[in-house]
Image (tube, rainbow over all chains, first blue to last red; front, top):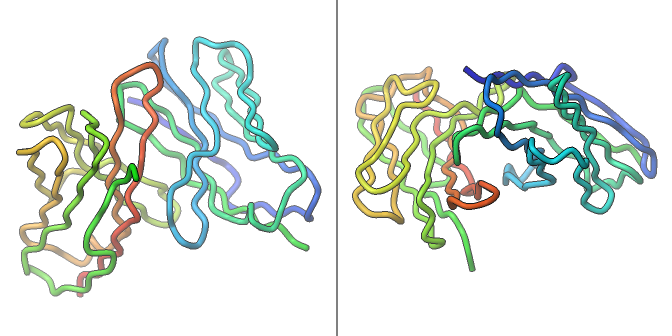
Length: 113
Length: 113
């Protein structure tokens, strides 16, 4: 069975600052994918960034980057230059079989002006 | 426009009254799933479908039914809803390929009284 743990229920950051959200996971699979999803108050699920486990290079999408530590089974999300529009719930998710996602509990991020 | 469409978006019903939440995708995706989102628990998979007429239980299947008679549709059926099924429900679809990115519907807020 797969598990994903987000140990930070809530985080806050000042606008323009940097924040890191933590995620750890457990799986016995060797091939898998990791994702960060953003859920704003509209409740829409928006893909932020994704990482293939077989790639050692950390994924980057504009202001969003990950620190993927495969041996430690850690997958943190760094948001640089935080913006008010980044305020949302963030979910870490693990995919070991196409479309069968295991999610963490979520982290509520608030960006303050 | 590529999308996953769920209906209804909001539903209040009474205990025991059968209901169906519809889900349709226009991307010709093989994989479709249903998730429920509860505070502090993240999203948990209810059922999963790999293709037409092929379904599998997820982590929390009790009290739910699904069917996949057409590739584009994957309805979620609650034959006898109970208050503990009050939740936010998401349908998602994904395509087999290099990266199994999931596309989510808008969500259905269900309240069972």
